[in-house]
Image 1 (cartoon, helix red, strand yellow):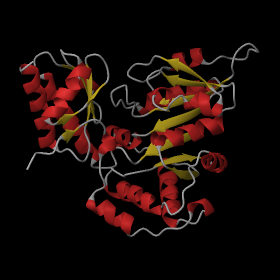
Image 2 (cartoon, one colour):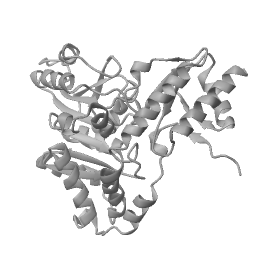
Image 3 (cartoon, rainbow, N blue to C red):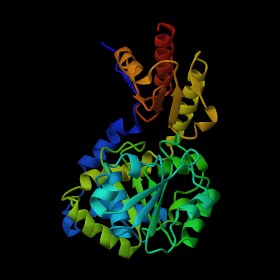
Length: 344
């Protein structure tokens, strides 16, 4: 029997575990548009409490959660400030402008991290000629930064800079629980400082679908209304929420294994002649590696050899560890990459 490929393209490729599938099958459900799904209500309450927010809203994806936050916080013609590599700017299909008529303004951060001075400089101030700066979006962990974790104090300084500039703050916490495990502090350390936060369950936590948007009671009420506008009102979706609850109970602490595997993988890759890995950049479950060949052309060769990864630049690969790939799989991934490079 052929060996299954090692899939390190993203932590979104994870599949529900047997225990998660059982939880889904046994979930108590109701019509969530009527507010009658008890499992969804339980998930929303759990996440809100964990993030020290007043309420939560279950949504199909992190993208929809981010966009609902932007829709609530801004009005057409206002400006959203983001780091240039952020998910809402790069990977949400131009939704900031298309859905809400807001204008993105990007800042070049250091591995996704912004300084207070940068935030204050980006805010427009009051001028009839200029768009009104309204919202700052921060991402933790920062995907294109390399899975970067915001140090709590640095994050607090950024939020304080936003407040002094009159900005609201949304936290794109798609991988916030990775940050929690890596930093050893509760997710609320960051979330309680923001006006709204999204957390995603279909990445490292292994659920098949689902994110939760958290914020004040008034914010969640308006976000729920906009969710309906975007087609996000679901019916007996407690089957999906049950997977997220299971992930909260069973898959958060184990994220440490993914972080350890990523560091081990990074060390192995760094030993390959011609491969460059910044080991201090591997803070969570992502490894970015520079290879001495064309990355877009190399990816199909790796796939044919049984390793699935993504190219993220002319010579850059991204490898993401997750619960479906163990340490042995990471070791085999490094062996495959080495063998192909040595045979080029």
